[in-house]
Image (cartoon, rainbow, N blue to C red; front, side, top):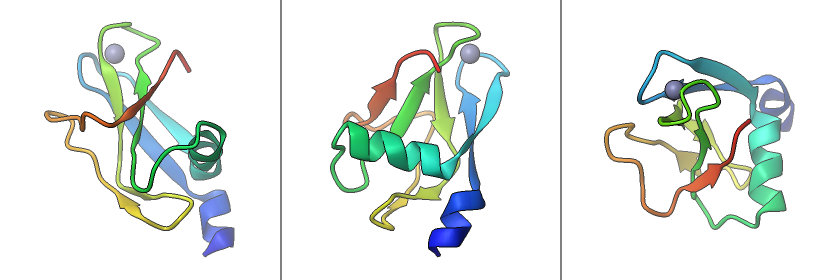
Length: 85
Ligand SMILES: [Zn+2]
């Protein structure tokens, strides 16, 4: 499981434009730990392309193996928004 997490990637898609980016899951986990996110709190990214949209992740497992899913039309209020990435 640890090894899988090391290699897998999360696809982030913007809600306002067509931008997508794939981010290594281990980096998302680094955000979770660095910012001390609570269990299952999703990491969203402010879109660096249009600066208006939010990039929402495909479902992923947090570093505590909590399944995180985000509905792009209803981003959770407790989501952590990472500035330009
Ligand atoms: Zn965008």
